[in-house]
Amino acid sequence: MQKLLQQSSQRFAKRIALSHPEGIFTYQDLQLRTTALQLEDSFNNKSISLIDGQQTLEEYSQIWACLASGKAFLPLNPAFPATRIEKIQSAIQTCTPEFLTQLAYIIFTSGSTGEPKGVPITTLQLAHYCTILQGILAPTERDRVLQLGDFSFDISIMAMAIAWPNGASLYAIPKQHVLMAPRYAQEHEITIWLSVPSLVTLAAKAGLLKPNSLPQIRLAIFGGEALSYQTAKILSEAAPNARLFNFWGPTEGTISLSHFEIDRALLQSEHAPDPHLEIIPIGCPHPTVELALWHQEKQEFTNTEGELCASSPQITSGYLNNLDVHHSPFFDRDQQRWYRTGDLATWNERYGYCYQGRIDRQVKIKGYRIELQECELALKKASSSDQVCVIPWDAQLNQQTSSDYTELVGMIAGTEIPSSSDSTLLRSNEIKQVLQELLPSYMIPNRVLFIDALPLTLNGKVDYQALEVLVSGNIQ
Amino acid sequence: MNVYEGVVHVFRTAFDNPNLELNYLMATGDIREWDSFKNVEILLACEEYFGFRFRSKEIDAIKTVGDLIEISEKKLASKTP
Image 1 (cartoon, each protein chain N blue to C red):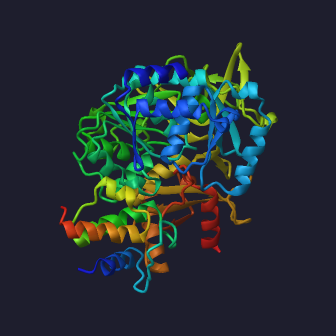
Image 2 (image 1 turned 90 degrees about the vertical axis):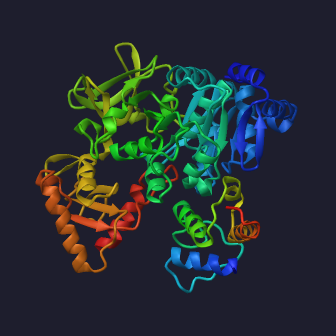
Image 3 (image 1 turned 45 degrees about the vertical axis):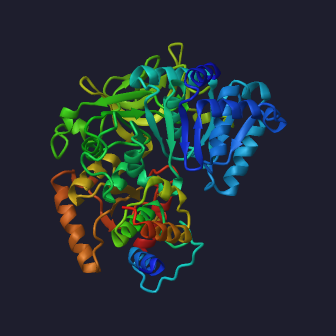
């Protein structure tokens, strides 16, 4: 990684490396700042740099300096509660300096046990990933890459991995104005758009993504969450000259492990022309990555449907804090090390791997196995809203977390909220009638709630814990 | 045109609160439901109300209600489109 950045800082010295609200830095500027930092004890004496996540110019320089010096960085998020930061700091105390010298960064992700999991990624893994991106996207020094999202979400590191080894310019947008990204993209003539799908949905809802409004974009890249056909279509129309990509992968796999290039011919109709396209496929593995589907009941790999497992040098060596060793997602099979991603998928000869949702979003109710994502797709059609969620519910305990679900609750945001309980009931029944044509009866939500907005986590994903509180209060 | 009153009108409409009071130091999150999406709504509503378009550099500089008022006043004074 150091070598990649050294080469680009020499070759592209005068080109803009970073355009930030606080100022503009060339590659030469960043390298000079690194040289200055390398003389400071406060930088040299630390085995790892904690980045607060305010996303200041100083923090970007620090990240560059870490990558260019072979030092690890750990991005935090100012919205993290103090207890989470304490846990993170405790976890890194367990790391030896020798271990840290191999690392490019550590990112903490949510753990199903409630403890954040520290994912270490080495400089070699990150450098290899940069090479993979070069092969797929061919970024050049003429590119201007949009950088959104918090540093604690590795999609932000993906933007740096696209731009910096290739002499391209990284354009950072203030966090509080991230939804104005289309405006920034127009003014700064952004050529590479990289975002989570929900940002495109929300920007379009605000009227900021009109057709043909971003003609200068040549690569439009989605990542970080499931991409719906409608969202892909919105950006394809806004950026008519862009190649469109859907990238998939867990943090544990060094940002992404597969990609699917979306043929524009597939996006011409109002609705997905093929059920496999309702959620855009995640395609085929990157070079040096092997993917396979694990059948939990048969305890073997399958070629139909199962949990996506990955084997690759890109996979992390293991969690920092080594949590929950009895349910480790890492396993050995046929002399290969595999990682269980927790994502369900099917294999399709035409499209590659097709994402089916999180394994923890597959439930059993009254003996029936239900994929909640399938319920949600149907609810989107029935409600004409892209912002829906279906959760399993234990009506006895009035909670979501249970081993004995009794019903499904559907939530709809982004539409007019009925003004009375009568109109709510009427609208709810109308939606359920449509659902009857789309789903078996056991998959139709027993209750449909209308809300202002789906609560989201810091990374823009649906916050199921917040939903539980909302639903519980509503039902009471 | 009184920019402060215009901005108050925009905020009161955005938050559906005719009695909302603003102070110059208020920022994202200081009012319930004031998030990134609400920011977009406020900025676009100001553009429509005052008849101008914010540049990205101006958006960068808007962190508080006070910044929004100051930048809007400058834009109107210079009659920048």
